[in-house]
Image 1 (cartoon, rainbow, N blue to C red):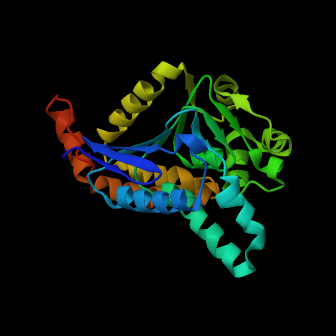
Image 2 (spheres, one colour):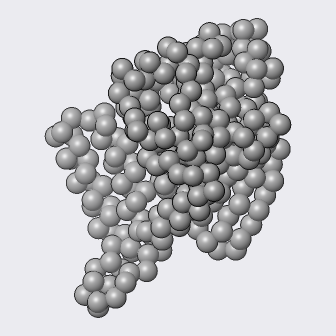
Length: 266
C-alpha cells in the first residue's frame, strides 16, 4: 500500500505497509478527551476499520500523555447541564470507539507513552495489547471527579480481577508501567526509548500474519462470555471460515513446499 499521513484537529493518522499508527496530538491539553477528539476518533476508527489494506493498528500519544482523561472544561463540566436524552446521546457517541476497537477484526496495540487515566485508561484497555513506558502513569481517575468508570468497569475486572479493579477505582491512585505489568493491566513495560520500536515491531509482525488473527480476536473476545459448550460450537463455525481463507491455503502449500508462507490477510 502507498504510505500516507493525515492530520486531524486532535490526532495524526499514518498508514504504511499494512500498519496504521494513530497518534493523539493535543499535548497542551495532555491529549485529554474532548468533543472534537471524540469526533476525530470516530472518523479515524471507522476509516481504519474499513480499510482492508490495514492489518494492524498502533495507538499512542504525543508529549507527556497517552490520554489524560476527559477535558474538564469541554467534556466533563457540560455533562451536568444536559437533558437525559442529550446525556445519553453524548455518552453513546463517546462509547462508539470502545465498540469500534472490539469489533475491528485486526489487532490494535496501545503504546502508552505517559498519563493514561480515566477515559485514557479505558481507551488503552479497549485495545488488544497494551505496551507501556516504565515511567507511564495509569489509573482510574473517575472517582476524583465524582464519576464512575464507564467501559473500564467491564474491562478492568477482566484484566486484573475484581479486587484490584475496585482498589484502583475507589482510590483513583496512579501506578507506573512496571506495576501495571506486574498486575496484568499491561502486557509489557519497557524503557521510554524502546516503547515505539517495541510496539511497531509487534504490529508489523501481526500485519504480516494470516487472516485468522482477526477472526481469532473475535473468538477470544466472545468466548469470555460463553459457556464451554457454546465456545466449542462457536470455534467450529469460525474455524470453518479460517479453512476457506486464502492464507490457510498458502500456509498448507508453503508447508508442503518447504518454504515460508507469504500471507495477504485474505
